[in-house]
Image (cartoon, rainbow, N blue to C red):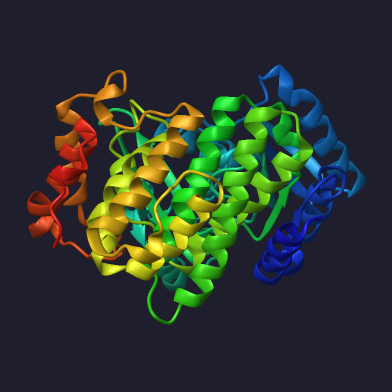
Length: 427
């Protein structure tokens, strides 16, 4: 391992201790070992109908069998963006088969849906619908009143992206209204997690790129919004995570099968998962929740973050400089960020991020996205005023409330539509 990889590995071990197995080859033993620590009867959840998944499923099933864990049911995982219907379907299997532990092997959506299904299976007789659990700490409130803990999940990650296997977040989508909502709660953190970075060599390049940009967004947004008490730790995690991901995506574009690239991306996006346990995401993530029907999550965040950076820059100059230096190191920024300040600094770093998106072949303005319309802007603004998503407004380095959304967020969205930073209004 290089020095940068060693540093990342040390941080992750400090973060999760012996509850997380990561790196090359861990898939053959860790899932069974961890499941056996939590129970004897398991439901296995994954994309079981996919041909590419069969060898992976076989390895995990052998691991479970070797550890003495009985698989009482095999369940198809959730579709992308974790639709509500899949959460309730997985919950139904849990209620009928009554396992001790859930073993889910998938990307972020499958893991998020399983975390939500475990919540409903545990607390459904008290609160039978998912909606009241959206927001911050709602699951813990019910757990404390009832004296229960959420059914344990062994989260086996398949994609370098969201960090869902490590975190307190579960993103769930209502496809009818095209809106994603969020459970944020310590009670739903998977007590055990596994990520064999080598398995990501089989995933499509589009998924690799989406996941990497999601990881950058986690690092970036948390660092920008970090409190004075957490800022140093957030900087350490974000600097390292963003550099690993930029380096990893650059290498993966050259050779999709490169194990080095996959390790860099796995470590970097795992640090993104650590970041969102230190603090919260903000503007770009909030906007992405309303673009779920036209853009993947990673692409939505990658498109929006440059525009939010221009808005935030006067309030967080030093943080923006730190990120700018990384993009300069890898050739995406020409200016000397130490000689810039305020909005001009934000513009320089925003353009560097746009340059990186262009290198990856990502859209850089909303109007270029197939299926997007001005109605999506209105949907974004409506969601920003939703009390269940208020934490994203508060996490901004230039915090907004519902009354300020029209004045400041609308110009950001209009700028992103046209690809023109001059439309953005600073506070």
